[in-house]
Amino acid sequence: YHLKKRWDICAYLGYSTVSVDRFDPFTNQKLNHEDLFTIDTQIGARRYHVIKKSFRLYSQVTLGVNINNNSDFWDILLKYEGLDIPKNLGFQVTGLGLTFGKNLFGSFEMGWGTEYIMFGVLPGMKAGIGYRF
Image (cartoon, rainbow, N blue to C red; front, side, top):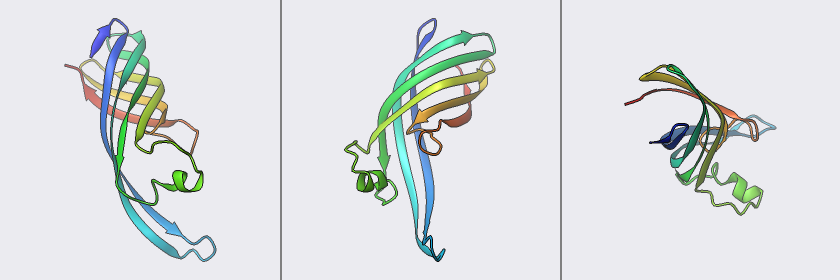
């Protein structure tokens, strides 16, 4: 939803699956397997830094809820780190977002949060396509 010249309200609804195999590090024997899912919905604000006909550069912040199936995989931080963080909090900070195209567009984002992340504290990346009405 477009608020002002450089500000939008943005939302995200996503579904992700993860397949996890655990192995004994000494014998390389498979210990167990889990098929997991998460559904997340977030809402936030997007700030455009550059707006051209077929190109936009932006940053955004979103906050919402993650719904995970029951699994050891999702609870690892809570069990082993003792963190007192609600496991259903969802957030995403997108430092760099780009779109290319007018009505039909491609997008690329780099950011950090529960929507996408790589290896702990390193930012993750997301690419997609969309349509502006």
